[in-house]
Image (cartoon, rainbow, N blue to C red):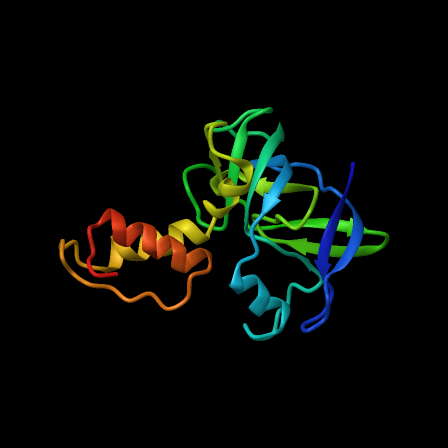
Length: 190
């Protein structure tokens, strides 16, 4: 089976759209059809070579998205075919698989445990979380990185003290999620 995917072929180079052969599922992996992907600033830094030398180039990109599970590999128990899921770089419960290798012609294309800049992707069970269909597909993509990063900072690093103030510089996906967390924890003024 093949998929179209945006592949990073060199630091500072634009992504290239390629047809890739999807690898056979290994223990702990699922095949998903990606619905929506977020674009995290970390991914942009990798693309521009700002995270140091990337020994995994050429590689698939994207680490937050919404998807439908199409097939599950051996040992996968928390999702089944047809489940609506969020894909995240954050590890949850389930089996872990560090990476996969796709093929384009004679070239190997690396992937981490999650890849969302593609039509279909092989994803480790630990990087999938089942969702209610009531969560919009576009918003679900943000659950993979922006929301847990922003609200996670408020809930895990800041004091829980009503009346404390907070300043947020930047209102992208993470900053907006900090705002949600600050409101939930009754920070004022914001």
